[in-house]
Amino acid sequence: MDMGYISTVIVKDSSRFGRNYLEVGQYTDYYFPENNIRFIAINDCIDSENGEDELSPFRNVMNEMMARDISRKVRSAHKIRGNAGEPLSQPPYGYMKAPDNKKRWIIDTEAAEVVRRVYRLCIEGKGNETIARTLQEDKVLVPMAYWQSKGLPRGGKKTQADPYKWCKTTIAKMLSQQEYCGDVINFKSTSKSFRNKTRVENPKENWAIFKDVHEPIIDRDTWEQVQKLVEKTKRRPPKDKNQKKSIFTSFLYCGDCGHKLWFNFNQKNPSIRFFSCSNYKGMRGTCENTHYIREDALEQIVLMELRMLADFLESAEESFAELLEKKTNKDMHRERTAAEGALATARARSQKLLGLFEKLYEDNVEGKVTDEWFMRLSQKYENEQEELKRQTLELKEKLDSIDRMQTAKDDFLRAIRKFMEMRTLTPVILRELIEKIEVFPVEGTGKDRTQRVIIHYRFVGTLDIPGIIHRPPYILDSRKGVAIEYLSNAV
Image (cartoon, rainbow, N blue to C red; front, side, top):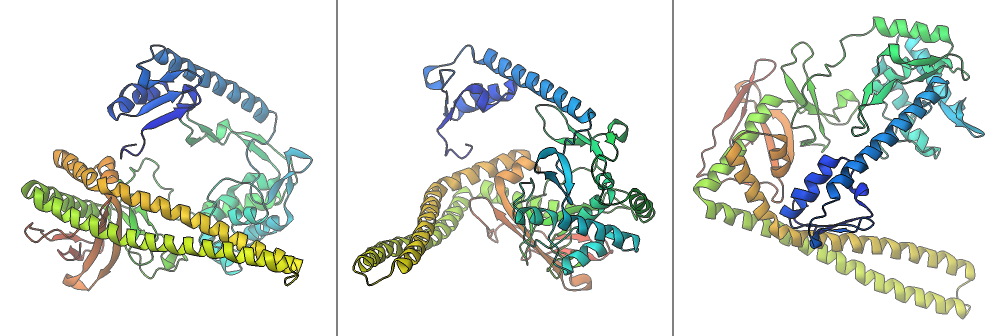
């Protein structure tokens, strides 16, 4: 909507659009009119083109009151069921719902054996990382991949790069779950409100624990023994939940392997906040380098680059616009040529398949091709035709997107001007200006240590700022006391 691609919003009734009367009013009364977006709620007979609806504010309040009332009733029913000993959560890995009674858990034999193995390894003195590495080496499917292989519907990440890559956090959670003793534990977490579905942990004194409800996978003595071992082997306190999140989270990518960089902070000195590659081989990944970079260094680099862009726009607006024009035209021409070529190839193959199918049908009628081969080949042609239809649709959408990119230059200039007014970094500014940031490993030794950082801007990709704009070097002492310089040609 911000980019002007949407002209009309249609909903069945206003409650389907939202039940927070403040947010709904913000959109219908201010955002939509300011952006020339038409709003239609069919059952409520609302059409913004016919003018304002005087009853809309009252209707929005009633919709929220209804949502609050439904939430209260659901919570009440939930509490009654939970206090009666009925499991409120999905069964953990190792259990499954009984086919004849969805409220009862039964042991999943194959997964339960993995759980028992994890507990045995822990008692033998193996740490979480070692256990995770052992399961990965033995090609044991992680819980989500296992549930998918069995056709069991579970929430969470549906696609995984490596279905055998166990995380030590998964092992730690498995070793702490009292449910494996046969117990049911309800109210471990709760949502903040009917508006905010974020789950927050409940204090243990508020849990409802019912012992020996289902068949145990781990006997209680073994479970308690493991809890003592886990308590003794804790090496560091848990992460500070009050630690402020980084505004660069989800923007950083490894320049070598393409995986995201994870945000972390030094446990002894939380003021040292940094990013490192999530695919580093030291964490059972494949990347050769951590691609470590400090958050404060990254902030100064991005600020420096954005300020240079702003200075360039302010001092030579025509040259800046010309640079963007050349950049966007060159990239769009290349992408358009590739997309148009692929689309022409797909259409030609589709036409050829139609001819092949007609010939196959004639040969089958004349007895030249058996019915078995006719069915086999026709199915093959149909599958290929469906794939070509999908590719054609995607390519058409890509071409439409390239056409819309013609307006990208103006959007980018508008975002730069917004930064010129603020001159500070905010999450909103980052989202409007930057697509992603690639971080490469530190190169060189001693005083010659450098690190390359590439900023990919929204709409336009990477930009080479002309030499007329002075780019000062940025130097930062690393965690080991050795200075790293982000040179002019390295940023």
